[in-house]
Length: 409
Image (tube, rainbow, N blue to C red; front, side, top):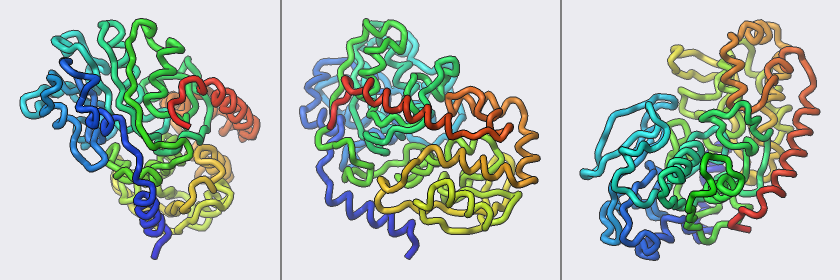
């Protein structure tokens, strides 16, 4: 039995032992939609907006006699989560006669025309727990629109799958604000979207924040120390490359590395974000670097694998990450990927490819990492230790700063 299968079985066992978490949607339904009684609702959601027993929230809203569903709004990947990352759409679709507007096309926020007849905006999407995941940006932009149009904004809260305690990575440099980094929080922020909504409003991280009427429908039963596999909730693929909770953990561990294009992180294979491989060095070398970076805290499976992307199909030499049953035993999710690059730069072929990266890569990398100069530091072989030491200090300050906005213990 592979470690990956053991982890999946462990998730199922732990989930059934902790079957008490109720999401904001579950609690709203338990109240028979009372907070939205008589409202004309615009619902921002996707395939993850489901009850703990799998009912689709959009359909429940459409059937409810307590309110009237006027429109649906979909983030990146669309209402059903099937669109490829980065693919935009302006196609107007419908669900049972209700229009579905895309918020990942020519507009990233509802327009006044889209909001016609709406007197309540409701947000119900499962986040991945990492700052660049665009659902957070969709929420912040929608909050700004709600404030500008004097429409109350409701967040149906859901767990941070990476727990509410793990905080890692640098706080976003606000000069790098973009749709993959919209508010100044760490890469792994350890907050739910409901908590982030409260913090963003209080900190005026969007225009007209003081004018917004914000209502968070909280979860019950969720504790900050819980990872997703401890919630008892079924995982719904948050996007095509995050089909399971393990892939979400891999996203936190390897996502920024993928922006360089020098390594495969399993995108286009059957283990997205759970593989790391190179065409320029062998399995043994890759394994040695990954094992060292993660301080031997992850079981690794050496393997050659193929991955198919827009650049074609290639074979890579590398490893598959197999997660330990106790994720708290992993010292860091975020930092090791940069340590891996540091070590790989001692390989001549990899160094040549790194030095040939186009200038556009640096801009994209800086937006995702939220930090200026990281690639240049790597290129100059500077020690990243002081950088991450500063990040850890900033993260502890953030832990204190966020305290007034936390809804759960």
